[in-house]
Image 1: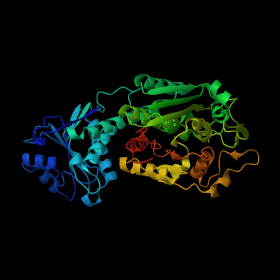
Image 2: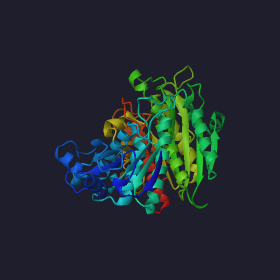
Image 3: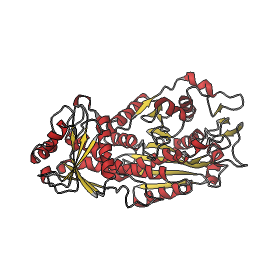
Image 4: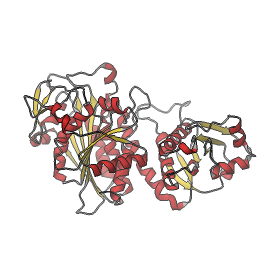
Length: 495
């Protein structure tokens, strides 16, 4: 979908649908007031009669409103003005976007960002509304064609503002492109989206942008480097593993890169520690860490951000066969540290530890790994926040701030030495699980052993990358958080 700016009297705007916002207790925004006045107070009357609800996320579609050039007026509720914040604003915009996607519309004109509330200026509201409308417009079509009587995604959405706000629309478009890429990769079936397919996607990005270089390590090259933890995960699959390295040179030649590492398990059966049938049906989404890293990388290069970025994607499939890792096996990682594999379903940390060790050669400014790593994170935080663990307070705070600003939030968990003892093994330097207690944290503790001397953060997106047992599919998170952080680095807001 294309996003653009247009400025005209809302009541005279000839469009299939114009979108305006109302609150329960605040004054009308300019576009809402103009349409209400031109229609003889129609919105005022319908609010009074409860035919329009101003509750957060409630939508009412009005047809052929007298005195209005638009064919339809979509009225979106933003709730009580005193309670309106960035998160509820985003939620209401997403609700509006889904209504637009689910109706036979090809274009619309949006004015909801005119709703004023404390703490968020016009530029922020415009960017966030544009991003939310675009995100809600996503519809998976790779293996399922659009139905004649089904949703019809928008082709164009214009937003009420003059050309001085074009940078906000450009950033929304760039972030939206990253979200779309991450969601498409997450939603694709695992017989299509294999490790080799992820390689193909990386090659497409490198072909499109001259500023991007690509390096692909196959299993033989990884074996020579001693990546036995990553390769151990792949042993049971007929699909070979790859380490994919995308390099973007947007900053100065001497600038240290931001390094993003993504867990790209294209399907996770659990290996010999086989998952239950219910849990296994969702395991194509185990690619979502790598998918979101690729999405954020695509956002960065699409916008030409002045920052150097390296994305390292550990792509493998975790399957059971006679050659698969066994519970009790001991493998040596690229770092030389040995790991007792007690559960082959704790495979994400095995591919990540070798990817993190490989990342040291780039002498990064910071390292951020992203993974759908633990069910324990979903137990702790549900589907609302990504889990964050870091050995650097400044980095953690910058990521938290980025998530708050873009409404792709994270919550920090502790990285205390108290938890490290749960990984002790009598047969190796560590074991790959720490037991039921603090499962998300002990997974982070495991990864921390491969990031000594680096400013590092870990994002566990097992709950945020998709919503378990729902049919909406991949969310694309945390593309927003990562993209906003990269913008902050490029703009000199953080280091």
